Each structure stands twice: as structure tokens, then as C-alpha cells.
Image (cartoon, rainbow, N blue to C red):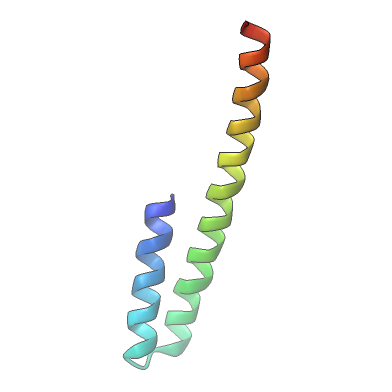
Length: 57
């Protein structure tokens, strides 16, 4: 998911430089949403991993 966020951010920046500001802004917004979604999922999995580890040992 982070990979897609980076790809969309780069495409958005290229589009903005080429003059397609509206479309570039949309790509950047989608990239930001994907980035934060990936961070939230990573934190949830980290917390779940810690709780499962405590129950196993």
C-alpha cells in the first residue's frame, strides 16, 4: 500500500508540473489517504502482534 502511495504521489507531482493541477491534486490526495491507511493498519497489526505474543509465552 505504501508502494501505491509513493507511485500516486510521483504521478501527481508530474501531472502538477505539466500543468494538470486539478488531476495532480487528486492523485496527491489519494496518495495521502493510502499512506495514512497503511500506517493505521501497520499500527493495528503491531498492537495485535504484541498482545498475541504475550498470550503465547
